[in-house]
Structure formats: structure tokens, C-alpha cells
Length: 437
Ligand code: HSE
Image (cartoon, rainbow, N blue to C red):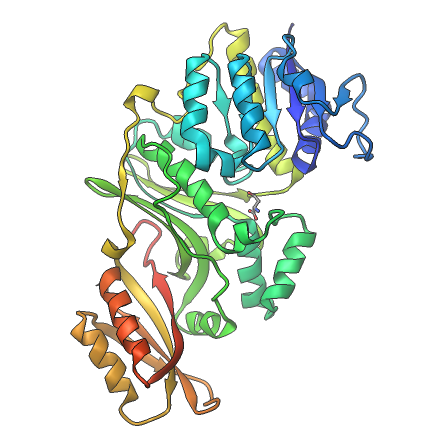
């Protein structure tokens, strides 16, 4: 049986998970791939901490070059994370004609186009199923299973930390900070939690998915990103009253000439299956023309779910090697020459519905002043709600709009903020009526 030699860069949670799964599933993987997947070397600057795993004759070294420059190693798994050292190591590994498997969404979103070019130049594979949605096979679905479909839209809950926090606030009445601390202790959160709660981790994943879905260059910079810091229990309560749930969504939609790509807290009706996706779970609804809606649901983070996704890439590459092929499936789902830059729709051009909450002065005429400004800016109000007790002379007023243009809404909100009718910045939450809307 052919032996495929593997090296792992980074022996943290995911690296340990990959080593563990290679060991635990040795026989199953041999039966399924027809190859021996041998973990030859692991590199990490920390070679002394006990990870609770007997790695047998696998070498644990502190110098990553002992893997990257080892002519005997076929596949390199990068589980270091971050964009600096990991990028240098991956580029060198690709230049050394190694196939690379990575879980590094930030790196792919920021530098993926360069990595793909380098992999192409060196005729090797670059695989990243674990980068997005943990164990959910979303990369393979877009790249292979849905190959005969135009992907009309994708709506996903792609950050377990944010979903955990929103669920805890909504279901248990937890405070934001307490829920974040729990998520950190449970190991979902990034080392730098603002990547999670300010929406950037979700945006990294959306940048990758958009590229696969539409054959476009990876474009992180033009994605509109908002996180969940401004979501309060008051908004969650209002949402419940209206039959909505608030989720941090990654939304990607194709239009004729451009793509919509945005990450922000979103109100979705309780009939939308994404509204049932709670705690740290991830899910994505893909609306494609031949299939209609398909939904994937699963653990978006955690040692073994992530390791499972890494192993699926290792197995793909091992199968290629033993069948004498490589780069059978294009890295971004389209041969590199067919990948185009597709423009992302500027946020001001978006049309959607809005939930607007103002802290309003409890004076006569305030409501007509706010609705007057909205009307002058073409924004039609569907309903107005006032709830709760007056505090310091202020009352929360919520307005739900009909479909309006983002530019109109932002202009109107600026005008409203300048009046003495409201205090502070209004809360704006966009509404998606249906998963495929
Ligand atoms: N911090 C990420 C999350 C980990 O919370 O989902 C998985 O990418």
C-alpha cells in the first residue's frame, strides 16, 4: 500500500485534533483511501507541553523547516493560524512542491489569490475545507457537488462565538461579556475576540465562499462588515415580539453584474431554518438554480470537527497521489484562467428592509418629526412600536420599514440624529425575509 507522508505545522488544538484523528482512524482511512497516511513530523515552537496524545514514532520538532524542506513529506498541514508566519511557511511549502492543507481563513481571505497563484505555478494542491464552517462540507459542496448550479444566494451563520453569544442573551438573558467569556472558555473564540464579535471572522469565510460560488477573485476588502457589539437585549426582545430572531449572517447574492457581500446582525423570521441554529452551531442555506435550497448544519469550530474537515482534504490529496493525478479539482472551483474580478455592490446601493430603534424624547411631535424625515427620504414605514418605560425622559421607538435603499436610510438617520428629538445613535438592523430572498 502506498505511504503518504504528512507533516503538521502548529501543534495547538487543531494540530492535536488532526494527529489524534490520523491515529484513531488509521485503519478506516487506509480502507477508504487505499493509502497509509503516515504522520511523519509535527513542528511547534512548544515541544514540551504534554498534549495528552502518544504520537508514537512521529517526530515533534521546533523548526518548521524540518518539515517544509523534507523531500520525504508529501502533504503539509498548516494549523498555526494568523497571516504572517503561516503565510511564509505555506508559500515556501508550495514552492517546495508540497501539497498544502490549511484551516486558515484569515490568510485565505487576505492573501488567497497569491497562494492560489503559487500553488498553480508549482502544480500542487491547496485545500481548505476546515477554513469555513468547521466540519460542514461547504467547500466541497460549492466546488464539486453544486458544479452544475448557478449559486443565487448564500446566507450563513459562520461564527460560533457570535451565535453562542446571541443565543445566550436571547435564551438565558445572559450579559454580553459573560456570554463572550463562556465562549472563550469553551474554546470557540479567536485568540483576538474582536475578530469574532466585530464580524471579521465571518467576513473572511464569506470572502472564501463568494469566490468558490461565483468564480471571482477572493475579495475581502469590499465586504461590508458589522459585528454584534451593538445588539442589546431590548432589540432581541423587540425581535421576539415581531416573530424574528437576530443572527449574525454572512449574506452573498449574485446580481447581473455584481455580487452582494455583507456581514451584519440580521433579523430573520422564525420560519427561516437559520433561526433555529443556536449555541455555537454553524449553518448555511445555499439557494442554487437547479437544486433550490440546500442547508448544511454542523459544528463550526472545535478540535475534532475541524480535524475531520482537515482529514477530508488530506484524503482527497492522498487519493490524487495514488491515482497519479493532482490538481484534479481547481482550488477555487474554477480553473485559474476562468476566475474574474467581480465587483461587490457598494453597501449604499443595497435595498432591504430595516428595523430602526431610536431613543426618543417623550415630547409631542417627536414621532411625526422622525417619520417626516424618513418620508422625505423615500422611506416608507411599515409599522411603529413603542414599548417599555420612560427612562430619563426617553422612550424607545422602533420602526420597521418597507424595502428602502441603504443610502436613503443612512442619510435620513443622520438628519434625525441632528434633531433634538432623539438621543444617541439609532440602532439599525437589516431584515431578511427569507433565506433565499
Ligand atoms: N472563532 C471561530 C468561531 C472559530 O467562533 O466560529 C471557527 O472558525
